[in-house]
Length: 77
Image (cartoon, rainbow, N blue to C red):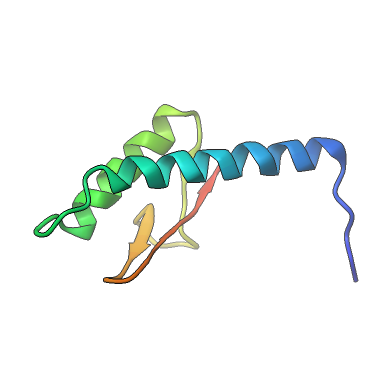
């Protein structure tokens, strides 16, 4: 089944996606050899909270889930 979004829902999605992009850009500023994913998580969480949203990752305590090749970011606005 396809659920169509209202204009308000689309606007919330747009705002959320913009915040995800800005958060990833902020995290990218501190990525370098030796920086832990815990440190990156702290940067992401502070940035998300500073912008009025709540970081979430499907029940995990972290704001991001990272690996050598990628980072996943979840939050609620």
